[in-house]
Image (cartoon, rainbow, N blue to C red):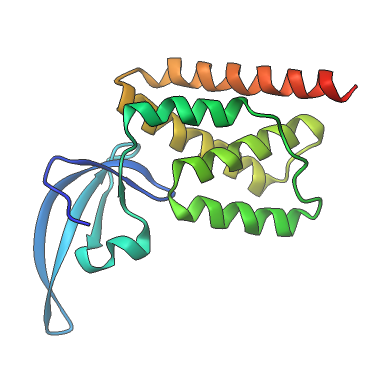
Length: 170
């Protein structure tokens, strides 16, 4: 997958960034090309080898039309996540690493649901916050909205879905 300078991309578990340059460096005596990626959330600079783009999950931001599908997923009914927190954490970590906003949304949804049923572990709370921030950042970028309004919409959508699931299970 080729990216252009100035293109907005998503780096899994880090969020939205912009390709600032494509540079060449010598690595173990071999010339390698790298994307220099500025991460939006913290302004850090990340070097991603062009040959490793697929392995690390670097991808283009979603299209505007995909945002509706994302909120549709967040509105759907909740499913009871795995009871064992270690298995659940492993499954959620794998989904976060895929870089897919839809997989990250599933993690957000599962942990949101769980957080209303019982206390989350410290690691799960961190993952919940990270998943939420990754989605907020990408949706705000795609729709040219401020992050606060996107966060409010996500919170409202999840709360409505949770209320509906609690009312239907009674």
